[in-house]
Every structure is written in C-alpha cells, then in structure tokens.
Amino acid sequence: MVKEYSIIDADSHVFEPFDMWAKYLEPAYKSFAPSPDMKIQGEDIYYKASGEVVAQWNKQIMQAHPMARLNGFTNELHVLETKRMGADISFIYPTLGMSIIAIDTMEPNLAGAFTRAYNNWLYQDFCSYDPKILKGVGMINLHTPEEMVSELHRIAEFDCKAVCLRPNPVKGRLLSDSAYEPFWTECEQLGIAVSIHEGTHSRLPTVGADRFNTRFALRSCSHPMEQMMAMLALIEGGVLERHPQLRVGFLESGCGWLVYWLWRLDEEYECHYWEVKDNVKLKPSEYFKRQCFIGYELGEPGVESVIKYIGADQLIFGSDYPHVHWSQTEGEGGCFHIQKTLHELLPEETVKKILWDNPSRFYGLQ
Image (cartoon, rainbow, N blue to C red; front, side, top):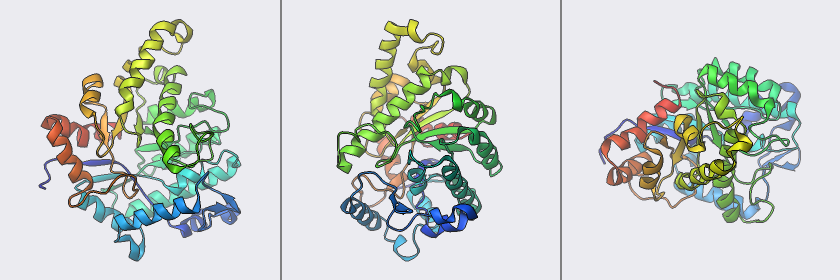
C-alpha cells in the first residue's frame, strides 16, 4: 500500500533490557534490579500472572517479531519497524518499568530510583539513536508526590513531550488528590502532555482483580474500566477545571466506551451538579472536548459513532508495538493497515487528523 499520510504512532512500547536496571540504578539501589523471572528481591512484580500466561505472551511476541530473536528489541529495530509500519514518529512507553512502579507496597524512595533509572536510559541511551523518530514518554513516580515536579523538570531537559501515569490509586491517592496539584500545574505551564496508560497484572488496586484470575478477564476489565475511573477522578476532583490548558490522553483502552461514559457522566451531572459545582463547572463531555484525547485501536468497531458524538479532533492512533494482544494481520500491518482501515470508513481530512494532526497537538509538536 502506498503511504498517503504522515503518521505519528502515538503509543508504542519498549522492552527494557534486563541488564539496563543494574546499570542505571543508583549504587544504593542496584541490589533491587529485577531478576529474569520477574521478581525484585524475591517478590513478584506481576499479580496473578502464571508461568503459562508469561510463556504464552512471550511466545506470541517472538512469533510476531522474529527479527528480535537475534539482538532483542533494540532501538535500531524499533526504528526499522516504525518505518516498515509506515510511521514517521514513534512515541515510546515503558513495559516492565510501568509495572515495577505499580507495586503499591514499594518504598517511595525505591520507586523514585526506578523512575530515574528508566528515564535516564530512555532518553540518554534508547532514544538518542534517532531522536527525530524515537520520542520517549517519561515515567513519573506517584509514590512520592514531592518528587514529581523535580523529575518533570529534569526530563524536560531531555525534550520530553509527555509523561505516563497509571490510572489506579497509588497508596490510596486518586489522580485528583491534592498532593498532585503542583504536578498538574507544572505540566500545564511546561506544555507537557499527560498520558493515562493502564497495564494488566499490576499490584495496584485494579478493577476486576478482586474477582477474576485469568488474563482474559483481568485485561478485559483493567484497561477500559480503570481509564473510565481515572477520567472521572480528573473531572470530579476538579483537575480539568483548574487546569484548562492541561492535555490529557487516555491510551490503549479503545475509544468505544467513551460515548457511553460521557453520556452517563453528563446525565449524572445534570442531576447532581449541586454536589460537585465547586469543582465541575462544565458538563463532563465539555471538559473532554476541550482538552482530552483518546486512542483508537486497530480493528476497533464504531469509530464513526465516536466521531459523531465528540468530533474528530480528539482521536489518535497507537500501534502498541511490540506488544501483541490482537490477531496479527498478514501482509502490510501496523500503521499502513490502520491507514487503509480508516480510509475505508472516514473522509481523507478526518484520517489525516487521527494519524497526524491530533497526536501532533497532543504531544505539542506544533
């Protein structure tokens, strides 16, 4: 297929090499480097992730990306795959890193050490190979609110365009907790976007984890439902009201749930606005349309309905490379495939918005 649009892959990932942690952790914390069996000093990183689940996921990954068998998921391979998929820029999120700092019982200073180690490696090592294509999304340590602003300033020096946060409560704090207010203020002032990005098997409070045990069930719940509650926290807690220039994205959870959720929130607001009027002065859907973005996933139905409800200016696309959680398509995949799919459904100008204009605004590239 001929490439018709400039494309930003708004949500890809890196598989952090295991030896990276021992190399980049500060001396006092090197003994906490994760082991190959996904433990930190004997404690499991992942929750309810059986050996069979891990083996099957690894098998799927290597089947989908055979080129990684030789040297792993290197920055060179990431650039090659980005070009092969048809994208021009790839925004890169953590994999193991995002799970490490999702251990609710972790000591705050240790979580900070992992955060700094990951960010140093991401910007100084991985993305430096080709910074025009590889754009790192920084990690932020929600375990230690007083360190969030300083780390934000530190990675801003690396030309960081966005940071990622888990939607789950951390040490009992929602995203709307007053302890995070200086962080939201600084993100708004610096123009750094905030991506809300969930992951399965975390050791944070997660929807469904108290009821189900299979990855099938846990993943079905975690991504969309935790995002829904994160959005509610940011609206109900007044974060979006107080920070109208803050850009927030909800990624890797699909977009089909958004129509119902905004409708539901608007309905409840109409009935109960008196209860939240100090923090919520607009309809929830108006906050979303003003400053939020959401990721459209490969093969997801109903994108026309989402656009009809919220317009075409909030949708972005991420390949989720190199993760695998849908059927792999033969032939041209990734961004070429989404270009073809969208082109069959939507006007050319709308496709251009989803693949370039919207993610460019979200990440502040303009």
